[in-house]
Image (cartoon, rainbow, N blue to C red):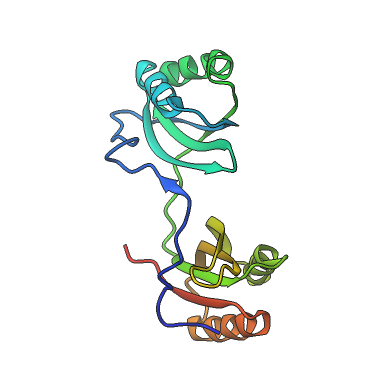
Length: 204
């Protein structure tokens, strides 16, 4: 069933690194690099990683981090001139050894803004059961709708202790899509799977 309001207990474990703590406005970001890091969680990891980025003359453009189980996971997009980005790439090996992380990197470019795509947020809560993520992904994939972001969380219901599962998606819907039809199809899909969900435009 589709609700008109987001449930209060739809809380993501994902921690966003906002401009107030780990993101800066880069003076030069013509060269960009995406870093992924995974390893045992311990204090000081973000301090060390962000300092290395700064010391190399690069800036953090965007980042996502989370503690999954007992492990630390991070995705970070950094920018700078060619020499500074290359210098950071050259420090990855020492960072891995010093922090006990598995770090991979990939050169990337700034995402091109597309006016023919409309960002929508999808929030889903249901009894924990296999296949929820797959079914949601298939629903949007079959309609050529790209998932830009996904956050999932397992938790126990406050009063009953029942295992619950929540999903937050950000999807890009082609502007030519008939939103009313899509919403109706999504409602039927959720009813069939006993999912409590909403789909609404992303406020910008």
